[in-house]
Image 1: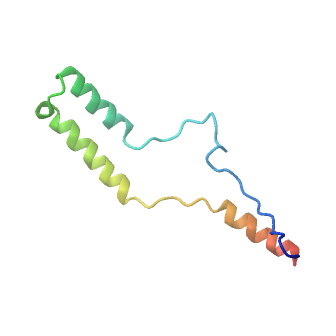
Image 2 (image 1 turned 90 degrees about the horizontal axis):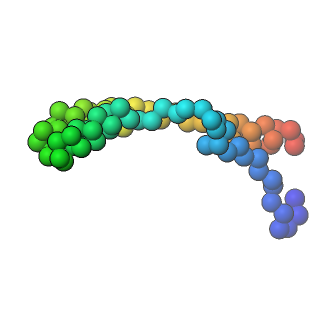
Amino acid sequence: MGKGTAEPRVRINTKSAGRGKRRDVACLNEMFTLLTCYKTNNFEEGKCASARRALDSCLELRAKAPKKMNTINHHLNRLIRLTKK
């Protein structure tokens, strides 16, 4: 490689790859339940304590779950390096 030239990198935008598909949104039902409770009870937090606890427990479970890593870009770059040898 000459000076000033960089090796081209191949990347796939994994966020836009699934357009049109419905994605799983974390704790969406619990959030809607809490917001509906607030609206029907004139935003009194005491009356919506159970909905708040349900949302908090859902978010805690979601935070502890391991995140799925998308490794397609890693493998693409690895294969490109192997083909150049």
